[in-house]
Image 1 (cartoon, one colour):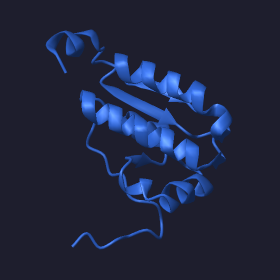
Image 2 (spheres, helix red, strand yellow):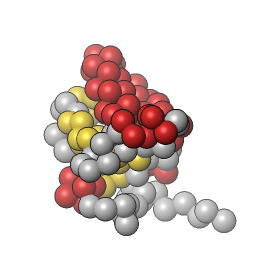
Image 3 (cartoon, helix red, strand yellow):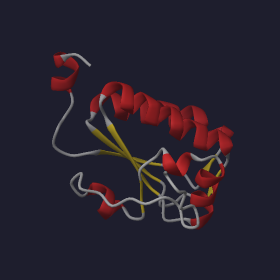
Length: 127
């Protein structure tokens, strides 16, 4: 990332992108645009899935692509996922280990000293 790109990002408040109740193929195009815009203009982006009760593999794929873009540009992407069914969808694709997941927006908005954990029942041995 160039100095100009870094300076153009607002370092103060994270950008919050609120996701719909269903994150599926139909929502993917809009979601790509919203996350892409936020990732281009902020140093921290929070994908708020508080209202999301369903996330299919295409939705998980969009979140993984957003994480890839964030990592490539020095942006921190955080997910708010209180729904057990959405956590299961992330875990089913192994995304729970790649995406920082918080249980509340308040936790995700806190400074970067986070304590995000993998989805319940998915404690893998890293060794």
